[in-house]
Length: 114
Image 1 (cartoon, one colour):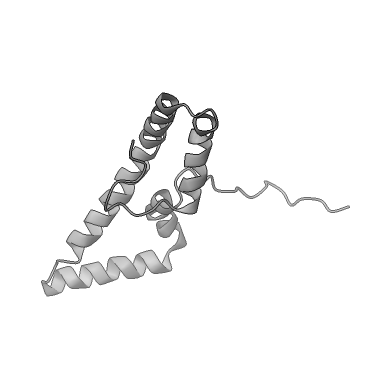
Image 2 (tube, rainbow, N blue to C red; image 1 turned 120 degrees about the vertical axis):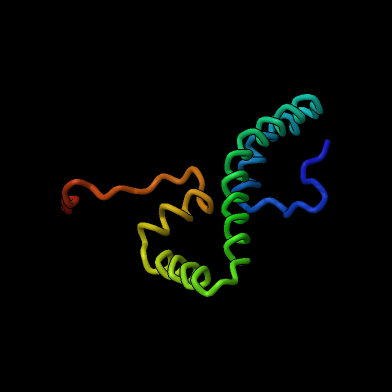
């Protein structure tokens, strides 16, 4: 049984909390087969999130290899737009950095205060 593979970064606190929720019953009952099943469920739950984050990372690495002046100008413009446009940042970065997070919506009308 391997929880974190060699060379993998340690899980972030939210991942650790989610992993604990998946594995706590199996650990409590000292049940290795149940622990293996819980780890497999957790891994399948995390796989899409990890794929999205890795895909974004690979795109950024590829973009930073561009050396032609026009490509460099386009890259800088794209990053400036991302930095200065909250809606674009939400669209591109939030699904990767905050997966599963639901945005709070403003109420249709102001809340009344007593």
